[in-house]
Image (cartoon, rainbow, N blue to C red; front, side, top):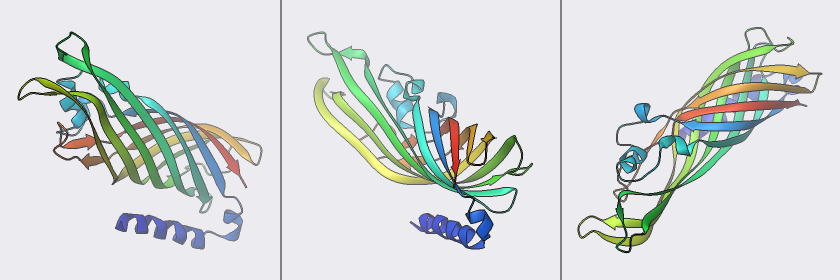
Length: 230
């Protein structure tokens, strides 16, 4: 993908332009928290989860899940940092049909699962610099989101109301903007603790196997951060 070459080029350029002293202060940022997908009122038109909500018993909020990640940070001067990272989220939601059951009265069960692996390239701006005891920051960049969405279980064929077992899987990679804001508190020269809110936006096209033609991959990551400088 061209966007991946662009990200690589930006990071290499930042590494080349950064002075040797800055490169010596690069850091690894570990993140742990939660991911909240875009809510029902703001999801993309044609979203598959909204389409499934008409038939299945679940809420979009059921896909709230944990979020973990690791990021490399490189200072470029006192007030700017370049970052490159990867994260991971995964959630499986068991559900049943709202108005249909098997002929023997059993529920028609199905599992919906969404996994994402976002790769990000970001720029952070620290308005008070990296030398303060409290370091707020704002930033943004681009995300390359690898995803896997699946529907596995029993399905109703509405032509004859029969029930069949099957699995439908969609995988791919989509690109979209990333925005973030956070604050961190240095603990000596090597470590820092903090918190961050990160927003991602992207959407995927799905095949006719699914009720909706789109999959909204957007949402908010609410993260605790632990920076290790080396």
